Image (tube, rainbow, N blue to C red; front, side):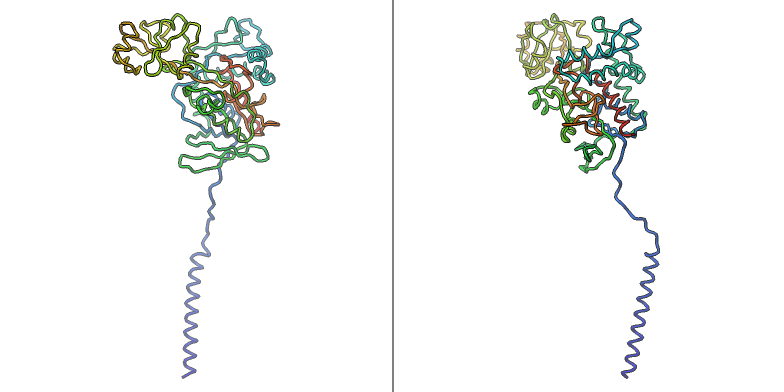
Length: 448
């Protein structure tokens, strides 16, 4: 019996081994001999060039770089408003242009550079100003070719200034945006830039956060900061210049995003405390320029319908600064000078009192019985920032000791041209010339 028991155990063991082997073979056939594709996390995005910005500066820098053959990511820092090209004057400052030659005017780049340097109280970067002046005529020609807008009227007293129509600014903004859409570049909105990625003192990428809060790294060979200065950032305006009551700029950007990104990696700045304050008509977002005679005929109101007095030797801008940055101008006559600013026509005293946040009784007393209709303008202050990031003549951002490899800037974000002043006639030209130079030089660096 003992022998039989051992034999049975042996058979049982063999059976178990056999079935175990079958199972192993099935598993091997099922899994070991099937081709598996390994899975990896998605690779970070990579571009030749990233443009961070909005409006004409960002658009033009992206266009130029893309035309030079760079694979461009255009990262919008905010949503632009429709038909708001900015508050710049419709004037282009340039030397040795075709318009000047046709008019028989000799106006050399060296003359232009000297005028700009002198206007800035001889404190700007002359080397940068001269390079800027040398590039001005070609930049004007390029802008005309790109947008169809011409600056035909030469200033008889200052032949460097080429004036265009007010509407040309809107058309330029619109056509640049159209050119961006037509080019083979990637546009992204909703990503918030957090920091520039550097390696051996060279910019190699950008960290950004998407709307869900997820952080990602985008690699690149170069970055152009083109989001304007900090004129719409109340905190930075207060910090650098002590200004309060300033309206947000009508165009997108100017929130100081590019400025803060560059400062985090040691970029130098110039004259951040220098701010130019301008008065605009809020309804049209145009500079509000009225003659002293027209202003003298206005009833002026501040917050909650508080009557204000305008002195003839005082500027409207100063009056705004002293009264929270916003006032209402009320006229009882429809002066032709008001037409470009599209005043609101109010036919009823009660509606007027409601708009000014006062009572009919107080309004009647102040207006001394002047009957309707009334013509109402709202005026506010905007800030232009002539100071900003220090750049060289190629619009490469400067660090403490030397230029920061792979980092460029353009537009109102940059400093060095205006010196200790804020030259109103220079802001639009600065945007166009610097954006073209930054686009060309950043693309050349990225594709080297």
